[in-house]
Amino acid sequence: MRSIREQIHRNAVALISLVIAVGSLGYNTWRNETTEAQRNVRHAAFRVLESLGELQEIADYRYYYLTNEGDPAREGQLRVRGFGSAAMIRDLSMVMPEPAPAAGIAVHELWVEHVNFLSELDVSGRHTERARRAEREISRGVSEARAAMLEVLKRLE
Image (cartoon, rainbow, N blue to C red; front, side, top):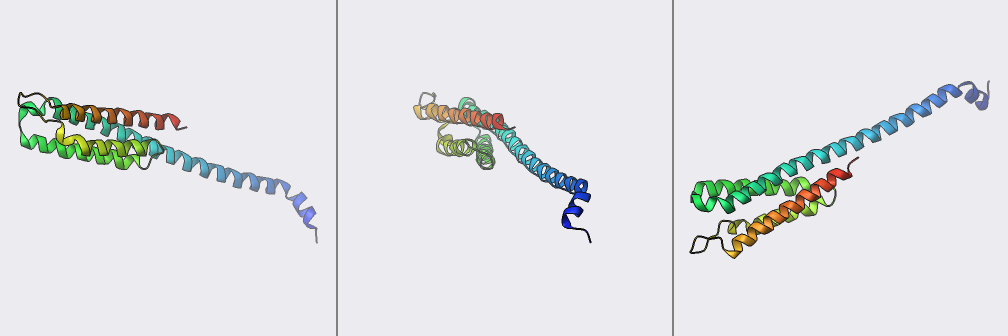
């Protein structure tokens, strides 16, 4: 019977190959998981950027044009789309690294807080100070969230 040392020496190439194969499998699995995680973050970031653009369009439309139309159905449609976009931004940003979650929550809170004032007019038909502040705050929040999403994308490998 051969000793363990002789068996290891005789099968050294096979043992080295086995160690390399297991190490390669471990590295490949780690790399695939990392790539998939980054792919998910990248997809979420682009979807949030699209929703931010849509939310900005809705806010601008409500502020600049809706007051001239006086169409309650259109106002309701824009309100629902705006809440949908704000919720999508908040929810998708939660699966991303910082600073995305805080920015997503902030946009949603700004929308909820200010949406009712976007089309508010005074007796002379001009926007009230509350409407101007609402438009500024929502636009600022969208810009800051956009910057946060771009920062997250830049950090990806």
